[in-house]
Figure (tube, protein in one colour):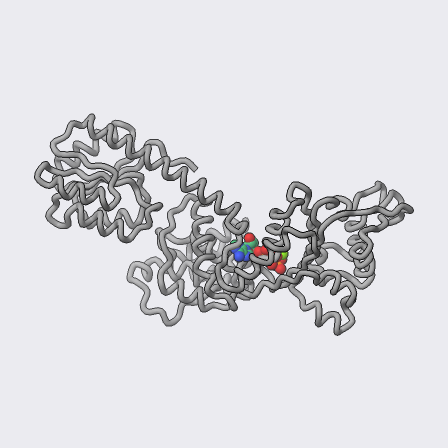
Length: 457
Ligand SMILES: Nc1ncnc2c1ncn2[C@@H]1O[C@H](COP(=O)(O)OP(=O)(O)OP(=O)(O)O)[C@@H](O)[C@H]1O
Ligand SMILES: [Mg+2]
């Protein structure tokens, strides 16, 4: 992602005439400029928008440039700040130095030539662009290597990550358990990506999605004529994964028949494609995952005990999100940044009350539900702050005891709600059922909103 080359600039000077002159010169040079004589207004703009450069006068009656910078810098993480330039008269050069200690890039001593301003501004914008590019590279690197995109520093997740790293170096069979949306697939991929076989394929089989009659041929392949409809010879997933990893997702869903065949592959590392006379050998790692309690299934005679032990060589149990609430803030930051970047929005913070309620909510859909909630909130939030309504309207955490929402928030509530519904309908192509699903609310709730906002066509 490249910063806008023209650069967006916020210009603040209490002297209207100077402000206008400088603003015009910068605009003529091709920059996007917003200007204001009011430091308070500047504060608001800085909070609401992203600028590449902030040029501020030092001595202003309402609030001095240095104080403005100090306050802004204190409230905004370095990576999210624009470059800062201070304009100052000779007598107050001291405070320009002070501003630079706070992080301002440079200062201009009044009176200065317009050309001088343009040069300094261009340099500041180049700096900003480099910083943006650098941050992007770093975040990409972290995404790749920082625990392979697995966020979570709770004790439980540290243990999951530690095990995954350990097992990645072996070829042992792994059984990953956890509720839906806890990150089983993410961990499976991390293990493969970390293993010596990472250049080889990782083949996923969703055992629950394939009808039982087809699963066998999907796993082991078949020869032409093996069954009605087998018009060609087809390689199975085990053969495709040879040398790499096979990821048997939703392993709890396979029938007892297929279980027996699977057991044999795990024991002998060989199998026969359906209808074939030859036996094929494979050398691969098996990672299985399930949200069911396989022990319980064994006790009920629904899962073969031998197979269970063959799979459960290295167990990795991922706890549900409600049992590791410490991870929630980091996950929110991660998803908010991810979706803000994807949608080109600015995201600063989440209302404290919202964070508290997100942390209290039980997340039956675990991390997946949290990600969906944050994605929608980022898309729906009018400003850089994720406000209560953008979250609660979507059926996730309803903030309850967290004090009165701000006035602005209340005014926005109906708008956000209406927009939420409208956009959901739009992206669902007008299909109400899909729109309701998109928002995670019932169709009945959707009907209510439709009539409330007269969105019925
Ligand atoms: N710790 C985490 N850090 C970052 N992203 C995560 C984490 N856990 C889960 N996710 C994300 O949440 C989503 C759901 O994760 P995943 O598909 O791995 O869950 P799952 O356990 O396989 O769920 P299911 O049982 O429903 O298949 C994915 O987009 C994944 O990237
Ligand atoms: Mg999964």
